Length: 282
Length: 89
Image (cartoon, rainbow over all chains, first blue to last red):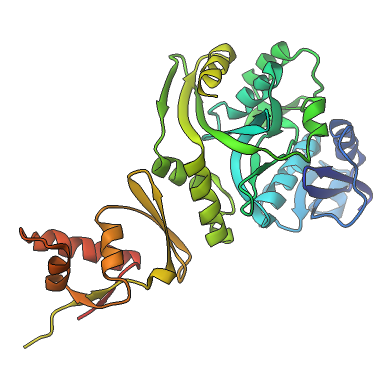
C-alpha cells in the first residue's frame, strides 16, 4: 500500500495500509503516544478504492484486511479514520483467538477491573471515559480481552469512540484531553475519538483481575439491582464476538468470570451518581 | 409387545457443567453447544449418564411417587430436541 501505519495496542499489533495519505496522518496523530510496530502484525487492515479511479473521483474507502465482510458499504474519504477503526474492530471480532472478546469497556484501580457491558447506546463508553477523571485507568472501550488461561483482563486501550451528545459531555468533564477529528454524518451520527489518558497508554501491558461486572444504562431515575450469574452469563455470551469459536475455553473463561465478580445493573442519570454507585459497590 | 422408549444422556466426560446460582451452564463437548438449564435437568443428565432408562426407570430413580408422567415426557422431549439426550424407541 502507498501509505502505511503500524501500531501496538496492548497485546495486539496492527498494520493499516491506505491508498490515501489522510487516514494515515489522522491515525498517526490519534495513536501518537502508542508503541509503533514495524514487524509482522497480528492483523492487517487495507483502505483502498473499490475501483482504481475512485481514488480521485468521488473517493470511497472500502475496508479490506485479513478478515472482511463481503459487500460492506464503503465510506466517504472524509470518514477514512472511521474506516480504519472499523477495520481494526473487524479484524479483532473475526480473527482474535487468544482472548475471549467481550463487547464492553473496562477500567482499573488497585489492580482490579470493572467490566462495563450493555447494548449499544447504553452509555458504557461515555461512563468509562468519564471514570478516567475520577481515578480510574481506562483499559478498554469496545473490546475487553479476557485471558482464558488466567482469568485476567488485558488492556486494549484504543481511542474511545464517542457519539453525538456524549462528545460534549466528556469534553467538558475532561478539558485537557486529546481528540481525533470530528467525523460527521456517519450512520451513527457524529463520532469523535478520545485519546485515553497517558497512564492508560503507558499501562497497556498491565492486566487486572476483574472484580465488578456492571451493566450500566443511562437513565433519568437512578437504580441498581443484582444480576444473577445465569443472566450475566447469557448476556456476556451475546456480547462476545468469539465465544462460539473458542469452544470450551470460552465456556470455562466466561463461567469463571461471572462466578468470581460482583454483578450489578445500574441506571444512572449522570457521572456523579454512577461514580457514587460504583464506589459503594467497590 | 412393544418395548418402552428409552433415554440416555452423554457420559459425564462429554459434558462440562458449572453451577451459576440457581442455574447450571452445560458445555456439550460433542456439539460445542452451550446450554443453560435449571433443576431437574442437571439431575436427569447425571442419572442418565451413559445408561439407557425408560420413563419408569427414571421415576424409580428419582422416587417420583406422584408420577407426573406427561411432565417428565415433555422434559425428555425438550432435552432430545436440544441434543442433550438420545431417545430409542
